[in-house]
Each structure stands twice: as C-alpha cells, then as structure tokens.
Image (cartoon, rainbow, N blue to C red; front, side):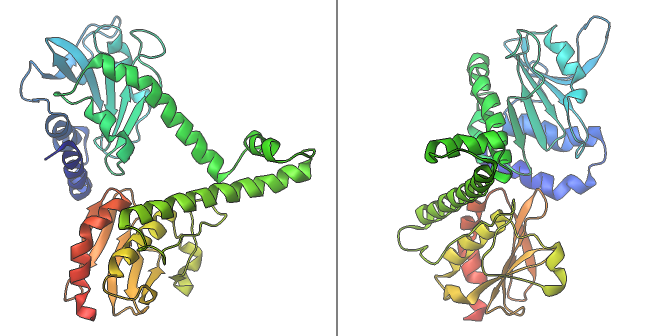
Amino acid sequence: MDFTERLQSLAKKIAQQSSMIATEEATKNAFVMPFLHNVLGYDVFDPTEVIPEFTADTGIKKGEKVDYAILKDGQVQILVECKKYNEKISTKHSGQLFRYFSVTNARIGILTNGAIYEFYTDLDAPNKMDEKPFLTLDLEDIDEHIVPEVLKLTKSSFDVDSVVDAAGELKYLSQIKKLLGEQFNAPEEDFVKFFASRIYDGVLTARVKHTFTDITTKALRQFLNDSINARLKSAMGPGVTSSLSLKIDSQPETASLDVVVDTDEKSKVDTTVEEIEAFNVIKAILRQKFDVARVIARDTQSYFGVLLDDNNRKPLCRLHFNAKQKYIGIFDENKKETRHPITSIDDIFGFTELLLSSTSVYE
C-alpha cells in the first residue's frame, strides 16, 4: 500500500474499534503503535529505532517519562506523548514534551489521542517547543492537503531540517485558514472594509458598512459555490454536470437546494454543504442509469437519504455525515444497508460501480 492507503487503512480501523478503547494503554496498542509502525514506517519492536517509556533527566522532574522516542543514527529525533482516545488534547497535556525538548536533540514533538496527531517543533525559540502545533492530522477527518507533509515524517523520507523549514509555513498557513473560515461565517468590520474601500467610492457610513457586510458574505458563499461546481465539472468531464448546481444560503455550514426534509424533523435537521456536495456527486454517478430529476434527497435527523422517485421503498444510498467519521451506506438486493467509511467527498467516486450495480434492481 502507498502512504495514503496506509493512512486510510488506519482510519478505518479507528472507526471500527474506537468504541472498545477505554484506556491510554489500549489507545497506544490499538492506534498509536500502528501509526508509528505501519504509517510512518518505524520498527516499534527495535529499541534502536523506537524507545517506549523514554526517560531523561529534566531538572526537577527526575525520572519522568515520555511515551515514545524515535531515533535516527542513535539520536532522539521525535518525541511522542499519548493520551486516551477521544480525550481532548491541548498544551496542558504536553508538559513532558516541553521539558524533554530542552534535554534531548529532538526537534519534533507529537501529541496524540490516537486519532488526532499534533506536530510541534521549536520555531519561536531554539530548543524550546512551540505552544502551537505546526501541523494537525485528524485520522477521523483527513485533510488531503496535509498528507504530503505527514509523509515527510516517515522513516524513508525523514529529514529534520526539511521538516522544520516547512513547519513555519505550515503553522501560519493553518492559522490563516482558520481565520478565513471565521471571516467566511461572520465577516468582521475590517475585513468588510478591505473589500468595500476598493470597490466603493463614497463614504463608508454605518449603513454602507452594514450593506457591504451582507454583500461580502454573499460573495464569499458564491465563490465557494463556483469552486465546488468547477471541481465537480473537472472530475466528471465536460457537459456531464450541467444539471448539478449548488446554492449556499446565508447561514453558516448549511445549504439549500431541492432537498426534502421530513416535516416533524425540520427544526432538528441541518443540511450541510458537504452533504449537498456529496449528493451532487451521487447524482453525477447515477445519471448514467436514471434521469437525474428522479434522484431525490431526503434529509433526516439521522442520515441524508437519496431516493429514486422520492419513494422510501426505493433507497439508492444514504450519507452518514453527522460524526467525524463519514460513511456512505449502500443497499443490497434485500435492501440491507452496508456502511462504507470515506475520508473525503472524492472517495464516493470509488463506489461508482457498486452504486450502479446496487441500484440496477429499480430498472
């Protein structure tokens, strides 16, 4: 398997086994060791590569241990501190990592709960671990953009200078993306003024600023809409997605199109952008077999259903996007649903043949 496949394999394991993980030791055995061994490629059974329960003198904290130390050429390069699965990790958990940075040669620290991996280095001050990670990997919601950066930490590719050089850009890139997300949902005054001052020649009165706040919000959402549809058209080829359109409304993280919501659940149902994007992909696939006008979405509190002819007796598939681990549910000839984990909307294209064959019963 290539690196991405190894990541996805571990992600599937977490989805299948996480309910049985109740302790830190179980987290290390089930998730962290496979990450170090299978994904990053270090031999966890070779003490010249990986030392569990690593101990070093740290001033007043004599004999304190960090969960794993990863070595290269006999020198500690990476320190790993683990917490129990599903425990929220933060800098308060990284005391050992902070202290060990000052007494070892390590330049990389990893703080993890088995699903989320935060990667730290010493950008702000030499030999002192930063308070903020330069990279965060969530195996229950993998960001495809950071996969190449995690690859640099594997045994076969590891070069500490290269990783640290890239860390500065990654650290600030993630913070900028977070800020953009906040501005996308609720633009601040300075953000609105940045655009308004470049396209409006009049005085920016309070009323004008209020108007431009609404305009800026709509422009951002239309920009996202255009980007999503361009991505679909690129994936499916010219002319295929002419009937696929997405309209994002003025509420954060929601979308509107011809989606039927069960009347008694309306107040509890939140149709998200990801569900709509996934629905458009499913329509693009199923249009090979059915008129897309017959493919209808029905959103419920428990799942996002896709039906033929808006008939509950003709389920085409279901989307389970309400948790971090996302699934697409596909039915067999007896209408028994099997859930398949996915890490991105693009993964749905991998189920094209299965979707087409499972829905052939309605022809």
